[in-house]
Length: 112
Length: 113
Image (cartoon, rainbow over all chains, first blue to last red; front, side):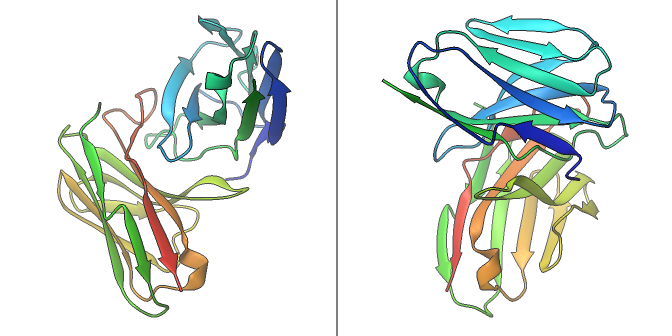
């Protein structure tokens, strides 16, 4: 279940900086989702990536699924304080029961 | 917002007492999950359900049991609470387990003294 590695575990940056967080594994995934969790709330879906090499953009957030579908990255351009939160990856290994496990997450803090 | 509610939202109890957390959904989704979240551990799966009376264990199921007698309700029970079960518990639902979106409740904070 801990075949997923998210890095870095913590990231603290100033507003306006760029950053990248990673989700890595030795397993091949059918698809992968990224969630963001704000303090006191449940996680909320940001994106689902399905195809190897796929790139999806959501405003200042760029998500990439590795060519071999074993890893993914999330890049944020010009971070804002509203980007603060816990970023979690959640892969699907293709079983009939789907996505059961999350990475431990990257806690991002963006300072004004 | 997805129709998913957890109760109670906050509970303080003593070691050895039974505790039941309830997850209620109005979406008629087949799949339901209970996670616990602790600092440094992310979300860890306790139990999940893929239909009425169909449940299975997750990675941290020891000390927990679940029941799902109706589509809309998924109950998590701690038969005899321990301090190590102090945590924030999240319920999640989805209509499709592979690429469908997981919708989460707002969490239930449990403190075991």
